[in-house]
Length: 451
Image (cartoon, rainbow, N blue to C red):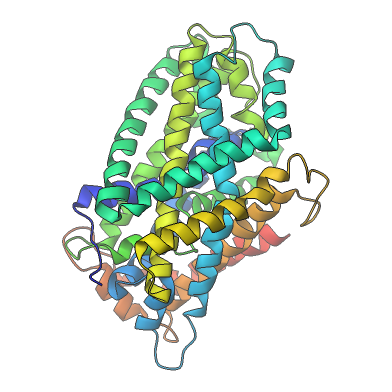
């Protein structure tokens, strides 16, 4: 079967950025920034994204483009005879499944809130208890949560059933364009709110005293973690798009563009949220509930809040759905490559499996609310712990060692692949950094996550 390719370079960039842009940017980034004191965290995040995120992204894409296969067969095509690097490819598939087991539920929350604002569930002047009660009621209702999760899963597999160009690429172009337009409108609105300047100052001006109060070490490791989480590196989620790429452009240049789009959305999300919070006297360090409790409190108290809430959660839905269809494509391509399935069979089998596998996360907030798995964590947090603290940094370390060590594909082969085409070239001078410094930084993330 001939392998599909992207119709255009823009399609590749938007689909790849869409995979990276998701709840890591628009849900996790703002609340982690709030918890870690604002500006100093953002500064370290940008540094780590450049010195860690971009290099590892080039490595995933290089394996995909050189092999023209999904993770397992990609490793097999490039590893030396008798080597077992391809075993990590199976862990990549497991990682993508685990990610979707809770990501689809959180995406369901996004579309649920979009419809709640659209239909007037949130009314002007609601008190904080009533706003928080909406979130609590949703979590307590397995039917409502399960239905919205199923909507996201089924919609995702329907899009992917049309193939790379007619499904994933076409929908991603529309959604990413709409997302970028929505985010600009929402940012302009937030910046024009009275008192927005205080939120901007908290968000963008590094205040080391505030960072020291949180703990500078905690701020730095949180920034390192976020740089990895936001790009979904280490589980082959980006590798698959390398396999659909042409060799017209260098992978360093394309990786910088993907990271640029990803960072733009993350930074702009903060520009929506922090001015609005400070404008209405709401603390920005509310943690994961920032999006679903704190922000709706802000919207119900502002002029035209129903409209702004509707637009905000439409933007959030697009951001999370873009990742869902990208990861689903990875799962489909892996089944087609490894098991010889048709796309139709892969869609049906994966669709049924992901629907079933996502139910524990839904039930973990109601029927199974007393179930605590890893270190007292509930189902969602346990699944997230495995993906974020083990599979993403651990997988990134495997890709790094495979690409730069003499026991894997090797630095020369990686460098040749990454520099094919026009654009920004990767310098050989980075080899010592890749061999010595970068593995240590990733190990720090891995150990810190386990502690």
